[in-house]
Image 1 (cartoon, helix red, strand yellow):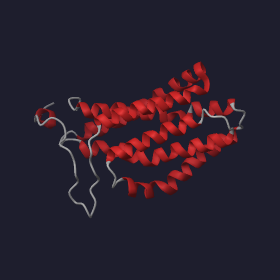
Image 2 (tube, helix red, strand yellow):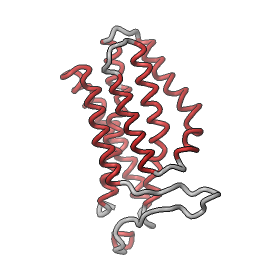
Image 3 (cartoon, helix red, strand yellow):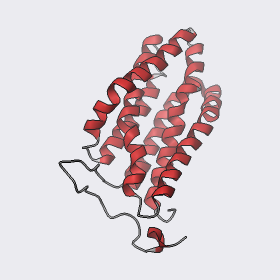
Image 4 (cartoon, helix red, strand yellow):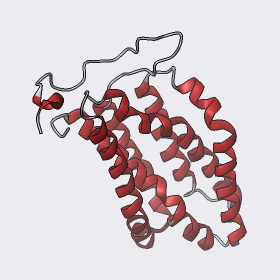
Length: 209
């Protein structure tokens, strides 16, 4: 799997995505407290996120699954970085609500595609390793993200949100370089369009250890 260098770039993009995304459970409540907002406002942010995901994700996925995969991922990274960057602006509760809505859109636009990608491009015999590595990198980002985000927040304050935006640009570049253009199979399009995957060497494709 590691011989597929483009997939390794995708994994790095996913690590950045997860590290930035998880800031809503660590840095966001600290920033809202520093802005003088009561705990109930943070609860409202999480409720808004959950409501939008439950009511809109399936509808949005019906649209995004028919779009070029790189376009979907780019939009997802831009929405994630843009939503968190909004938190650095003045404006109190309204700013936090607006930022949460934007990065929630990133979650329902880019999330399903990022998670489905390994199963779409994995060579026969390596699908388990491709999917497992994706889950590992997402979990790693969720593990290191809170500590890293809080440390940066303590050092530079609300500028941490601009750092999240810049990190998303790096992640987006890695995704563009690493991800192949594939489409989800549908009833109207039984043969998915895809680029050749990886090295044709049979050992790389699953014949070796």
